[in-house]
Amino acid sequence: MLNFYSKPVADRFCDGIARRDFLKVGGMALGGLSLPQLLKAETAAGIKTSHKAVINVFLPGGPPHQDMFDMKMDAPAEIRGELRPTKTNVPGIEICDLFTGLSKRMQHCSIIRSVVGAEGPHYTEQCITGRGERNPPAGGWPSFGAWISKLQGAADPAVPPHLTLMYKTDHNPWGEPGKGGFLGMAHAPFRLVGGRGEVSKLDNMILKDITLERLNDRKQLLSSLDQFRRDTDRTGAMSGLDAFTEQALGILTSSRLAEAMDISKESPETIARYGKGNPEFHADGAPRMNENFLIARRLVEAGARVVSLNFSRWDWHGGNFDRCREDLPRLDQSLCALIDDLVDRGLDKDVSVVVWGEFGRTPKINKDAGRDHWPQVSCALLACGGMRHGQVIGATNRLGEYATERPTTFQEILATLYHQMGVDLNSVREFDLRGRPQYPVDAGIQPIKELI
Image (cartoon, rainbow, N blue to C red; front, side, top):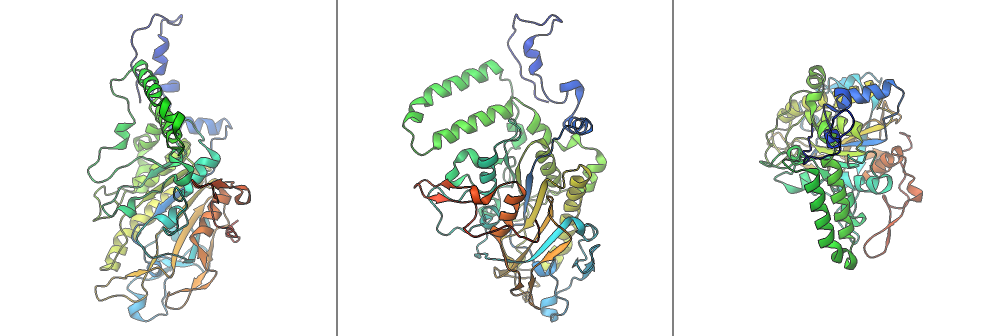
């Protein structure tokens, strides 16, 4: 709960309660209802609270496609590896047997086994913008969330439309959630977590010993000092800062975002379904935080349109199969709990989930029982979002080296998510900082027809 302390005021209501006392918000607001209780009550009353949203799960490092969703049991042992497939509840689809939960929920999922177009470097860029780092426009490429923020705005004024739970990683590109690009800083992701040893962002969303009067005085002073800069600014930076200021004030004067980050509001049973994460940073990658999948669901319920997160470290040049046995069950548990929650809450038609990495791994296992970088092909998992699921899209050859059927680009996957968000890609055009027209995806890119 956020309490804003005010100086004594003379004006009171007839019941003796000061007007400013109504600025106490959070757990005690509205008869003591918490956010989940409010949402449940609204649903029971027939009030539609759901909106289109995307949860983007990035697996930094390049997850092994042939040990997860595209197993090659007919290949030689040095390619096939140690793991085994299992049948799913959709006839004809098999995945790694470490995905014990996903195998029972394949009707809510689709697997793309033929993702192509990776450039090779370790970065989030292609899973965030659909494009690589080469030849960016003036101002840089906006992320998927930045486009949605620009085109659709906030669903709730107290919750930024574009949020990220991506931890800052020691290998910087694995923790980069994208930017506003030429659309401006106002549409960049609002970070909710930091890096190794950083103060919790939740603490930064709570006013401490600052009254609303003092907060407003500071806002007025800032506005007067910056006015001359706004009058002469030609880059749009100041308007972006203005938007950030308004956004920050909206967050600070509402408990909605802080409540959404607080999973203690959930039942112990729900929290247990997601599993206990490990907050320790794994080498130069991200922590294995199962809880962030639950927070992502709470954030989209609270009003976020795009939430991104990074999970663990998947650059397994050695000990690939031991790491699979460690991380795949944890990922499986988190994803299954998220899918179940979306279905149970009636959000599965509106909230899409995508799980992917920057590239795949080499077919041949190296001398350290690892797999090396393989940008030629990778895989992705899509879930919920009102798409036509229970299918596999694309295929690779017998050794998992390259796509033989339905090669699918990162941009096609994002085009599908734009479509599910209600964005008409044929009618969207913005201009970069040199005045050149730009689009969310390249000309001719279409959503994946099998899914829509």
